[in-house]
Image (cartoon, rainbow, N blue to C red):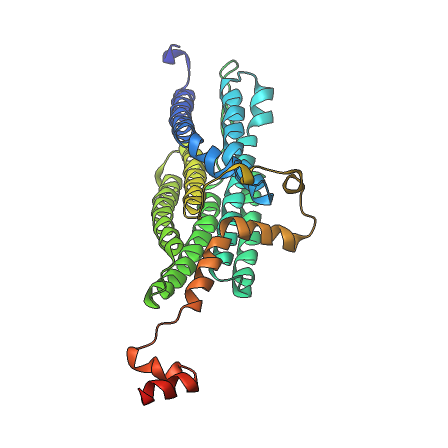
Length: 326
C-alpha cells in the first residue's frame, strides 16, 4: 500500500489497525500458551472429579475466551463494512461476560472464606450489579472507525471519561475483594490457626491484585494519553490476565484439597443434573471451591490448646482426686 495515495488521517488509522492486530496476536498467544501448559492439570483437578454447577462456571471462564478470540479473528480478517459493524461489539460483550463471571467466582470464594457471612452478600452483590451496569453502558456506546473499502475497520473505544469509569468499576470491585481477603486471612494467621488453604488464598489474592492493579492502571493511562484509535487496545489483554489468574486460583485451590481424583470421583448421572434451587447451587459451588476451607477451619477449632498447668483442672473430678491421692 502506497501511503502517498491516502490522507494522513487514513494512514494513521492503518497504523492503528496494524497495532490492534499485533496486540491481538500477542494476547491470543499468551492465552493459548497458558491453556496448553495447564491442560493436564485441568483434566486431573476439574474433569476427573464430580461434575456440578461449579464445572459449568469453570467451562465458561476457561473456554469463553477462546470463543472470544475466534470471533475477534474473524473480525480482524473481515474486509467488508457489514462484517465489521456486525461484529465490532461482539468482543466487548465477551469481555463484559468474562469479567462478571470472574468476579462472581471471587465473590463466592470470599463468601466461603467468611463462612457464608451475610455481610459478603450485602456488600458484593450490589457492587457486582453496579459493575455490570457500568460495563453494559459501555457496550452500547461503541464507536467504529471505518477504513477504505477492502481494509475493514478499527474497533471502537468509549469516550475518554467513559473509558476511565468503565475500568474503574472492576478495579474497585477487585480492591474490595482484596481487602476482605486480606483482613480475614490475617485474622486466621494471628489466631495461629493452621489452615493451609488460607495461605493459598492469601498468596493468590496478592498476586491477582498486583496483576490487576498494573493492568487496570495501564488501561486508564491509555485512555488519558493514547490516540483515540488505541485507547481501548489493552482491553483484551486485561481480560485475558483476569481469566488466567482466576483459572490458576481455582486450580491452586483444587490442589489444596485432600486426596486425588480416582474412579470414585468420576461423574455419575446424578452429578450431571443441574440443581434447581439457587441455595443448592451456591452450596454446591462452596463445597467445590470453599468447602475445604470451611472444614479445615472447623477441624482446627475443635482442637484447643491449654497450658500444662490447666490440664489437671479440666479433668473430671474423679480423675483429679485420684491424681491428688497419688
